[in-house]
Image 1 (cartoon, helix red, strand yellow):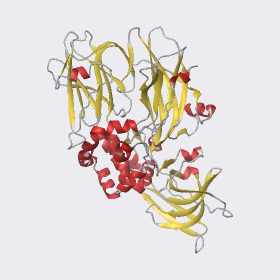
Image 2 (cartoon, one colour):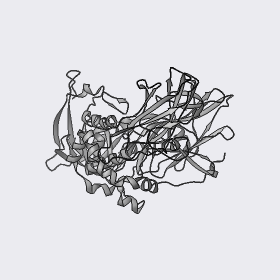
Image 3 (cartoon, rainbow, N blue to C red):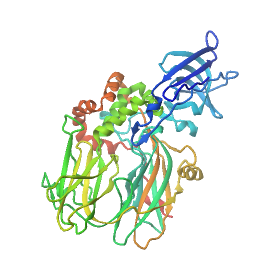
Length: 548
């Protein structure tokens, strides 16, 4: 029986019935007070605003004690209950199993056989991969091993982790271009991400893109499209900081850079060399700034082009929090899936405390004027963003200031040029599957068009796509728009660090957490990049095999 009393108070009552008990079926009426349901509206985590109350399903006895498959799993239900099973199987739209049931407070309420609808499950914790695609989209593996490299075992917080990575062929190899939906660490946080394919070049009117899972994670890709954007002749089309498209003329590097004399040289162009601010060992949120001086633009409308990515610091922090959750990691993820107010606010607090790259501009030593913010990019692929701005005097030099959390960012280049066009229109091109590995090509094509729950990619999986692109009389640029989410697996080596009270304390106060973890990160920081790259879980394939 369900009852909703008023908009600010969601009170549900339900019945659990399980068979196979010592004293017969157990009937337990549970009332859950969700007074904060309405307040979920307005809580934002990586741009997601949600408001929900979920009705509790009933668990029905399994008729005749149906046989089940072996395998240990934890089924977290939307209403907060937990079923721990030693065997289960999918029957139609239901999961049948044998195990024990706990209420939201983890009080044992029964044991025996049960059936629960798949739609009632928020998250599945498992020690093995799941074949059924509907269950696989809910599953996080919690017993993975870091056997990739010896260095990875010695420094497990530096082991490779990634959302889906995207590559294009060319120049004798595959070129890393993008990582999709970097902040979507749970199904409830599924999001759309747009990234530039800087090195993509059509061959016979076709662009090939390889999508890979190179980490110990479950990726669920819900859509993939190529965006083709045309700009004026002799321009470069770029993605703006707020996900629009603009065209720039010729760009130039800064003439002067405050600080080290090498800074301008490092930031002059995209050449693989990065300006890498190091952490200070005291606070991972400590802020720093770059002040760059550019020659007179000759135009009042300018664009500041920033080529950057995130450091591995936020990866270290995330992995540390996962390790502290230990055997309770599934509870943490399930709380995110249920959009628990406290957990969402805590994770959002880390993003807010670290912050974006703030871009400001000025002329004639006047006050700095904010022109835009560049949000989280991800630590693997280089992001290219342009921040449009307006100067008052086209014939005078101007300064650009970048402010950022120093341990959180890396900069490859900062350039500027005249803005030729804004708010350019993108044309969408659907993907056709070229090489799909173990997947059915038609099924993948449907899922990339948003039909179904999404393509589940396990470690080592790769799918290649072909995009037929239109011709253009001017300049043309290509961008990949991906949608989905991923689950970080719990590494077996992390379980020894379980400390749930400490995890809760750090989550409750992100600012203090970033200060607490600063000395630990400082110790591992010098070798993190090398360990991270050496521990990719992937199989490289020669680009020659992508020929049409």
